[in-house]
Image (cartoon, rainbow, N blue to C red; front, side, top):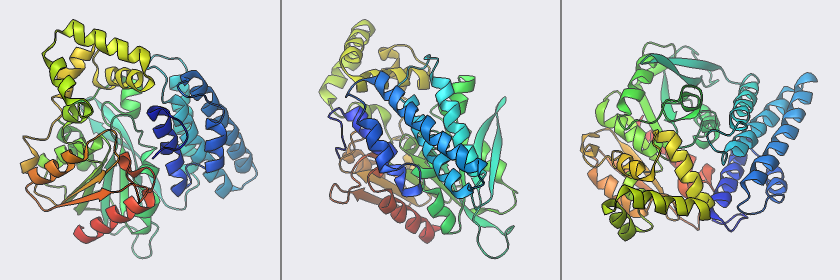
Length: 398
């Protein structure tokens, strides 16, 4: 789905911001007047213009808050969060502007949470020698507020923030259906990556496990009806956890990402096989050339170095091969929903069917189409449709 830019990287990130209109995380007019000021491929203008819009909307939010107009303030803070996050996106990991943009994004989101109609609790989950940050949202439903509620734990992937998952996982929709919902960040994501330098790890059962431990015995959480939703690269993390933790009653790969190396090599499989045999120096030189000629290649390499804690393309090749569910998918026995888009430019559709066939438990595959406006990665063109399918399915299994 092309929105505005010819280049895929800028266009998809525009669609990503625009998609959050569904839950008040953006407004089309604000998105389009911002992108109209940006030339394709100009990452400096991308940061400057999105930050300009974010600052303007945040000022509007603050004025509304000072005047006691909490509903107006809440909406503007949510939009400012999205625009600051988008401004940060293409900055290098060591760019001094990156951390402030991230912090403003997070603070705007939290300012909006203070004005929500439903209870929200900030979480600090014990993990190894630190804590993982997260949020627990409870439905404002009639009846016993302390009674056990089916719970959805949602996690992101390669570049998402816990705050962004409010829109991407459809928290308002989950709450309206009576679910408690948890959003959190692990190593290689959000605050753990930015503030502590904690890089990604393939064995995410050791990340999800402490989160589930933290929820056990907590007021209002029914751990007997527990769903796990993994978004984007979280479509690897969540099923990986489900393969090793039988507390997970249902798992959703949204989108599927069961073999990261094969997904990354899908556009040029012959070239990928060749590169796997070449000396490291040749692989690194080819990657450097790609970074000089393509915004998307430059961002992918820069973010991969940061997220995975590697420095060279050759190292990255070897690291990506460790992120595969091929040998453990048969351990997944809980009901599994696999979501896929026919236009997904990150993960080939063929891998969705393959993953479905590997899972031992009952599996449902839903392929979204171009015609539905949901064919892109994570259905960022029709989140209302995707979330309807996702939560209808969870209603049935939980």
